[in-house]
Image (cartoon, rainbow, N blue to C red):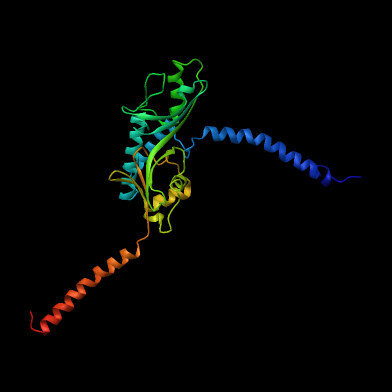
Length: 275
């Protein structure tokens, strides 16, 4: 005779529990994938036009809003200017390189350099203008352009940025780097850092304008931010900071001593009647 308390009790065997979990996961995975696809990925290594537009809107909101420090608003204002420039002018500058593969077309395949007028000159094809094209748009854009002259063109394109890496690295110089490369990997591509390197003194600059410095630089390293996410373009410089050397400390110490020496000499001179 059974009791009412155990009438609806289910006893799970280990095998039944495993299969139930697998079944639940099989239903959950498509939902997770769909949710991820519907959510804009603001941390994509190479940003799309929609993502840049969203970032621009947010930067402008902070730059023109209250409740933020003046320094933070200025940073966002500068970020907005860089993003606006990308959306208008595109990403490609003279000297950038593109690793281009056109399947079945050996003459068009290879490392291509963006030339004067910001055009791509591919052997056997008319010049392809790149002004206004983002890195994320490069492959479909080139597929369309090359497809005008090559039937059923299958195109692969990897955008690169020409940057200088200087300061506390073993091999300072100019480098062609993948646009989706993380800042940390870009630094390591210059042979790694020297013993006196100090990231909190590092900056990224475009001519005289500082794009990133100090704490922002170290945060970008820690967070795995890509070169594209930093809105970098050809000619920008990554300068890894270095600790002050002993010579610098010695110079500072000597400068600090000089006023004391002057006063001492003056005092001795007064005592000797020279003044």
